[in-house]
Length: 367
Picture 1 (spheres, rainbow, N blue to C red):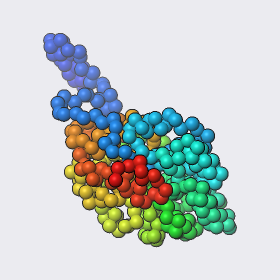
Picture 2 (picture 1 turned 30 degrees about the horizontal axis):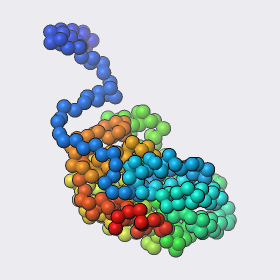
Picture 3 (picture 1 turned 180 degrees about the horizontal axis):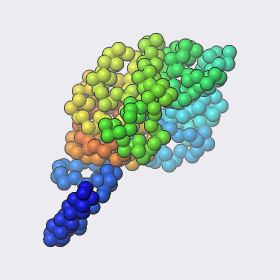
Picture 4 (picture 1 turned 45 degrees about the vertical axis):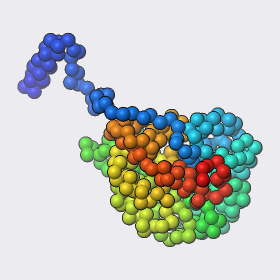
């Protein structure tokens, strides 16, 4: 009976549309295919170049130990990017080779953060050797330490147990970073919906359908809340160390909660790599947050694709309404510009980074 009714409905629809000279409606269209252009007519200000030179504190470039940097610098210039921070320094001799290669080409345009290896944390001299590595790396140009999400999720010790990011054996590393005056940027976990059931109530359903490897079970490798709490424990235990919470700490969709964390952890800064779409869909709340925490927000992008910066500029600088994000599976909603005032823009674009990341060339930026 149901099939007969559907057939009748289809025949009626096709007949009506045929009378109007239009193509028949395909009622079999799936969700992914439904993406009609908006009929809304509003002022548009696509922005391909930042209003002020900026520092991207969250980027990844693996071969800077040997690469010719000319193309990268040309792209940076086209975007008005003053300095890019490569978080993939790896440490030791590789980092030294990177900083030496950069120094020969564009010494004031690229900063490098180092990384550490948690996999050998069971070695009796792991803590001592890792602290020595941090000292060596800073002496050879490292401007900070980057902790990957794998280091609180997938790295295991010799017994196969997940290494918690607040493992006490790492405490001397955080303390050393504070002593040396370098910030630590930590990416903990992933968006919370990745841990939630993949059903019609999951806002990331399309992304997880297209990228199934991102889906996590409730306790795989640990509950989301557990991993996030471990990160916060590190911030709490090391008040003399500056931490940059990557991706707004995955609270860009809950700025009231993030506001409470900013109050609890005065040593915590945030950057908005890969979460600009969350800010763009709540312009009034985001404006409130930027106004209140203007001295502790940094510009971050994450994956380096020059054309994607344009959306970041548009969200931050314009008052545009109802424009799309560049990855529909990542954010199927439309966004709105925050139209931030110049003084806040300057802080987000470069002033805050200059204050907490040592050794950056302030002469590249306005006063």
